Image 1 (cartoon, rainbow, N blue to C red):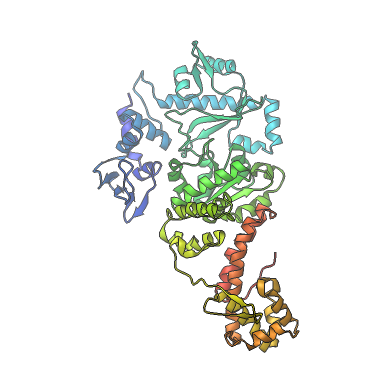
Image 2 (cartoon, rainbow, N blue to C red):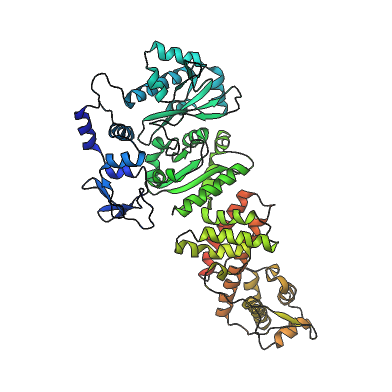
Length: 558
């Protein structure tokens, strides 16, 4: 049994907000915190946590209690098990009455085994050679407690000679029973990576084969201490930097995390052989950091990036995604001395929502109307699950990518018109159906015919090709050449001549539309490397378009 005095000491140190926030997402609401109740389905938050009273209560289903009660109900544990779970989370050592066993004994076994694994590495030349080849230095080996485990009998002999209880070793996931009887080590002939809880308490291990085993990486099994869906590798070492810098980097594996930290990116963490899940959201939410997904640029990395981005954006996270180019991963790039390039990639990551929109669109042949409609429905379905303000902010991007009207997404209706040519007169005839875009282009050109001193100013920001179907007439005007086309436009009373101020405003509007359309073309240009593509899109969206919207005449060549 757990000693009563130890229980009281634990209770005195419990922070209910910290405990519950490990399980569900909570938000400050005055002096209290609120959340959606995890015990019954609800759309509006009616679950209230009181830090001053150290209790919770749901006004929807009427459940309530203290932190211990919450863990009991959420984890489906009895009272002693809930106490042990909370003690584990707080890195608190419970005391027990004589003759009883507990999870602190399992943790002691984990700590002893970790110490042994770590010592083993010094005598394993092949393992150390592999680590050094991957660029991991001695400081990182010690910081992350990297070790080595040999064959099964070596571990069993260690446990036996140090009188470590096999039942607790099994409970900790270090060994397991054979069907034929006896025990065997779960990890053999692998480089080992100790896994810690958010509070820095050891809970399990990961192992990397160096004998070409089909399973390259394996983790501890699910135990009372180890739940891989709630853990992030490296978090206990990263959390101080995460809180300080308001940034969290999610990568794909142990080596990526270690090399990120080694290069100074100390906000890096990784999932444990699983995709990001809703169970990870509470720990990701702590400190409200900007999330950076740093994944390999291969097919698996892209798919993982899309799923993670959808999960995070639907849950209201702010973040970006970086896909590392040419089959490289962060660990490899840092090992090759490309830390500055990695830093640049992390700074220039693509926002998650545009990334999701573009990746969904890329799955379909948008030249095929049926495929285009499928893409539209999938993108609209995704946008509809975002908050209204966020959703409306990205409708323009989605409509640009798909080349469909904004109002199809439920946004503001835009005036959509068309133009035609009078075949008999062979001159541009603008009717009630003419688009503002066509009228704008022709007004700019006609203004330059009347005020040729403005040509130099215009061509400093606009190239003839930007005028598309009017490129030839624009080229004639800036070359100051006469032609029937120029004369016809000059005589067309439906096209107005702009003042200098109107010209500047129309040029900014024209360039805004042009660069907005360029985003779509860049997205689908397979000749552009993905890193350059991400940079160009971000440059246009974050720098060029806002300046044009303010009326500043700016151009960007690429």
